[in-house]
Image 1 (cartoon, rainbow, N blue to C red):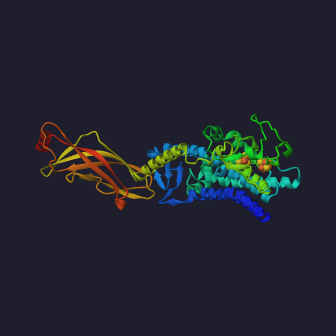
Image 2 (cartoon, rainbow, N blue to C red; image 1 turned 180 degrees about the horizontal axis):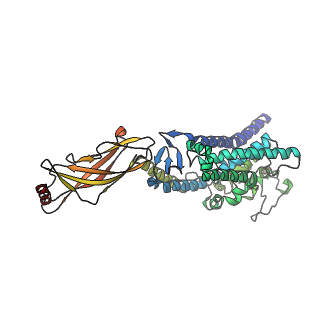
Image 3 (cartoon, rainbow, N blue to C red; image 1 turned 120 degrees about the horizontal axis):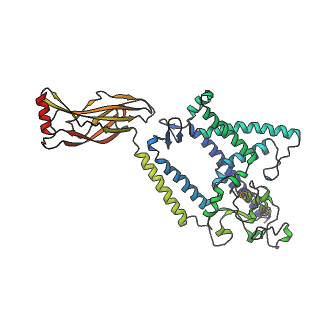
Length: 478
Ligand code: SF4
Ligand code: SF4
């Protein structure tokens, strides 16, 4: 029996330490590596996400969109907001505890640098006790940590800017910093803010500044999973008005399991007592779950603080319902927005062109006895690709109308927008109407000569063919 009990204890330890705390650390490492490396990854010159302030382009999922195509941004914002709301309904402030840069920075600063590396704090289990800075050695450590914080914050600020200034240009700017005062100001400003936030403001940011905590409570329902204390097993520590009823274990009923050790309280980075119930300050980091799991393992009991739902722990109404109508609704909306984004991305034209007819209806010339009719257009063409291309135009649905000007393909540099005159002409008789000009609907295709199948767009344009009597008179005069 003692052996079984020992095994159970070990499993409880493992459950608490590997399943949550270390899982969180693994997520932190992956999130950090992903954020640091993804700005450097490009496919055909396009980034995963970049809202470039340099050439005013949006790169999304390795596709580059021009400013004229920024109608995608509202869909991205919808994706972000609906996603955050859906995740909150499902897992409370899960984003805060597991993915938020603020939490990752604080864990790295407090638990890794201050505690593990410099030993300024005795243990990561007590986050309430501030380090003692009265000794000289601790003062030196504090200054050293501050210097390290500035270096790391500078890197984090640079990483944040890489989503708005591509890394390759970032280093050009950094090498000529005097020529780019706004860039310099942004980099220094973000760095200083990060140091202030992580070193001095700390979790007060999560509690008092971050707007997310304000919206979360209205999104919660009985199935939202969060850190939750089990009153029925541990005993009631607070009344409904959050007044503390119990400070010592002997004030609890004999069956109540809470040892009043306060391990779940001292470990909490936002300085709250989870035994009071749901609080806005809780970032769902689950440190308290780990702490209580370790305490309760000594009594061969499961944790009194669980990552669970009100339905399961407080109301005892059975298992948490993950697939409930609300969650399915969020899933459907998110899928629809994502599908719209993907369809728009797939239909994206790889060049931009406007073709506008010039005011003069047509020009008539005598071409060796044949009437030559010309229509002129102004074209505005933009190369949205990352390399030079030669462009040309052809008419798809009428082989009697040809492109007279431009006479050769013309080069457009990456991002460049150029204006040209397009002249379409014909020497064929396309209509024979004595009463009015004839409008012909043409389909024009503009394309990159070296990538005709991929970089090409089609536009409908109108060609005006003159009245037969006008044509006759003009030919007689010439
Ligand atoms: S109560 Fe504190 S320790 Fe527990 S999950 Fe919330 S923030 Fe983390
Ligand atoms: S860690 Fe567990 S046993 Fe200790 S005070 Fe918190 S709930 Fe009670």
